[in-house]
Length: 410
Image: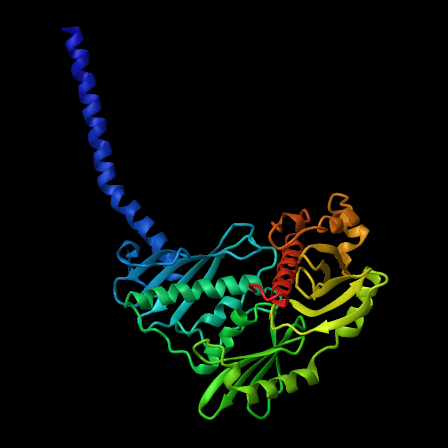
């Protein structure tokens, strides 16, 4: 009997406690859920003022780019909030997290860089330059001094808006010929760094000079059509239409006009380059400049003879933490025989600051490398990612220039 009484009391305690917990959950559950929803809404409302509630529609959309992680629809019809990421060469693999508010007309109404891990990031006000833009992003510029980061940011925002348009959630923005051609420059002339606007005249509507001195880009007109002309530092020119077709052969007059303008403004690299060749290969003779129609970071090229053999020299102006000048000598078989640079990165003091690296050993590590054997590991300087990337670009661009010289793939 005593055992039964104890059991009954225990059951009553459990029942009372369980009932109390159930009642508490009935009361607090909705409050907790409301608070959680409110916190989530507050986050999304940071880029879409006045949002009432949101529905995650990510799973219902097709062909979303990898940079879009979530899409939320504001339930009263205000528009959409997109969660996106962006990764540049300087994030070390860690992405920038971006929150984008897009109203029902397809215009950006709010945007935030939520988090990032980059050492060189654009200014705090840069994202606000996207507000009021549709998917064309007309007039949005890259951020000076943080080109890689701002390019990755812009590409991610563009991909996010284009994904909404592709799913018929917003109308796609329309790009004019001027914008189409300007945005084509990094594709057809990847060695051109930040573009500085120059004076324009004649058929040239807009003129740009690459900040690293690798060449010029021109938006030009002939009749009612617009074209892009790019001229590299060696004087080679290519002309493109708005579809991205190489139409140089059909537009010789435009090419000549662009080359004339570029020649009047281009920095002279040849004489100092010859002096550098003579220092790197004492006894070099018959130094002859070469014009290549490559549009990467290589700004000058030349052939020469040394001890009865033919060699080729290339000068690259890639950009690391600062503007860099990197030189390669390549033999007739395509193997590097010498590599040098005049920047501080190759001074002993700099290498000592990064673990006591031997500058001579670093440069000698390039000797014998060909385009087929280059892996990128040869350029690595510990804790100097930007410098390493610039040396890698210079090396790859040099091999591309050599291949172009020999008639191979560029």
